[in-house]
Length: 463
Ligand SMILES: [Zn+2]
Image (cartoon, rainbow, N blue to C red; front, side, top):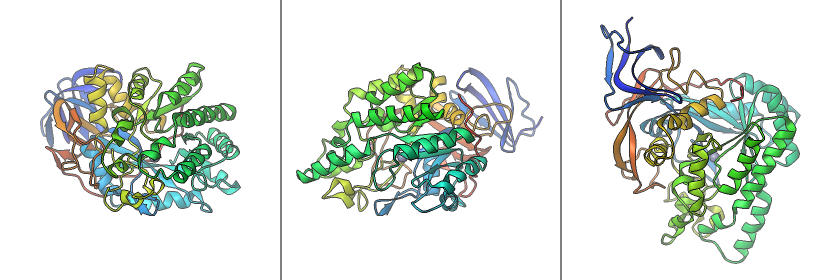
């Protein structure tokens, strides 16, 4: 036995196990896991002393190089995957948007071109459907067979992304038939639009009104409707970026009845709240994304949801817009502020800090939330999402005790502020491998743009 890379002295952590062990890598795969693997002629030995050896993070919700509201998200597939890798994320599932009148294939091909030659680690796509005629309905099955096995639908943003219930129901039925998974942006867009128009008419134009016109009830209603439509269609459903207890209760209720209903939340909903809008001038625009920030008490409910498996995944909804020139597009009108925030880099550290150091769950549950469950739900498992012989050698050497303070001055995202500025983290990646190649080592980027590959995902298999 001869390895290209041998990782020693660490503690292997998966979603189920935690033990002292060594990992041997040949080419881009894990080829052996053992206690005393032979080190003769090994290409590279990585010392993981006092660190965890865990599968690379999988972020299933990112928007790189995405046009929105007359501008484009600030990270492309190069800067975005580099920042992700710094934070221990080695696979992204981004969203390819089908605009009205287009085929789904056009969306897929457009986003494939955006990533090609740029991504430093692997990526896949969900397809956002905004226009579902007979032809696109047919295409759903083809896309699933080509590895785009999930679709995102919107119940918000009328006139732009929003679909009516009949279309959602058709899409869900078709997804169920072909083994696709529907991801749902669950907010009642119609009611929200009325609230927004009312606020504007009353001269309420500051950033905080973005949040105040999107009540938790609008999210809970849509979550419950999405689950009901999925139940009627015999389809699984995955609620994206769940932000509040009201919606969480709907998911819990469905899961208690045994329905295949799943949901993710994001670090911003675990760490930030409406109080973040108490900042001078227009600075609240830094926290304008959808769903919005909620009252602080929701945070603990979401942490509990993660601990109790009501929520299965933490993703980021990374959609960065610079404060200067991009967020400023909405200086006099909150409806013109590009919706989105940067977060791709700090997901693992934030979940570890609050989850494991915060004594809410175990290191195993941490790995499950940031890597294994996303892989299982989205057809990447066991190639990714775990450490096993034959798996891709996407590996993070994670130091559970290394500390830092998050700041835009030191982050690697191409954006001029951090939502988490000043937050203290404990638990950070030290070395990151993507399919056996070092991408981050000793605090430096050592990868190569274009080394990342498109990953064809399997169909939804049930979890
Ligand atoms: Zn999103």
